[in-house]
Image (tube, rainbow, N blue to C red; front, side, top):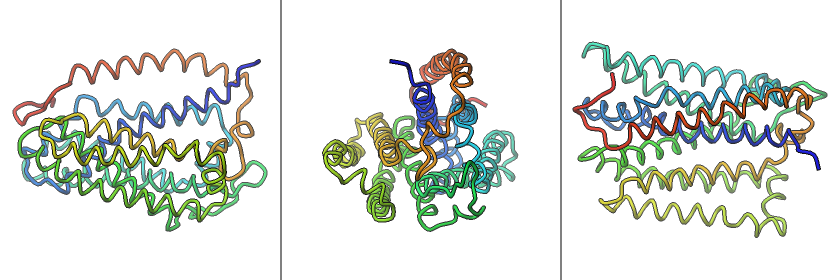
Length: 336
């Protein structure tokens, strides 16, 4: 039996996307939390908690995008054409946020507030745009032949905008739980309390999306609520409920530091899994499968060799970076 290279490439792209969501999620969440923290020293602690590792997170975004371009060119062409505006907004947000991240440490006290707002605004724009893209993928794209025939504003729907808000809430939760793990004192106590409020907001978002998607898209309802699929996929919402309860309880336990963050990563993984369950095997919903959008096998195989060599290097470098800069961050240390 031959190896399906298209499935391997799909798994690589999914893995890269999940790694980006996880690793840049709490990074963007730090920027979103600037709106809730006004003290300059606490803001420095927040930024220094991610300063050694933040600029490597976009590696996974580049890997996922490049993989989509090379392995599934039809999907890449359709998504870029249909989502030019939100993807451009995302890139602008990421660039502006990156510039603000560095400049705020070099700025004079009178200018630092501007860069703080820029950091928060860039994080918000990038996160919201990513959520809109996720909603648009669920919505699907109008494709005739091998080209997108919809409007440049097809992404501007209530569901997509709600998904943008939902991802802002999810990344904020990643940010608060990350700071529980990396900070101490008054900042950590504030993050413990804020985590519970954000968690409740995320549960509302998950509930609304879970009701909205099967009612709005028949193929989603058939995937989740037909037998025996219903029993196979039932652990996903049950685990979401369990993880949420555990996060709530652990935020009230002063001895718990890493638990809430690890459980939040589990929530993100479960949400991503739910998205995959709803869409599989379509890479361009609602009809075009990953095999129909795939590049020739020879092209996929050529790229696969280099990709399988570089991914372990990225993983080892990433793991080593986080290991070196493990532990708590205080306002007396920094990396700039």
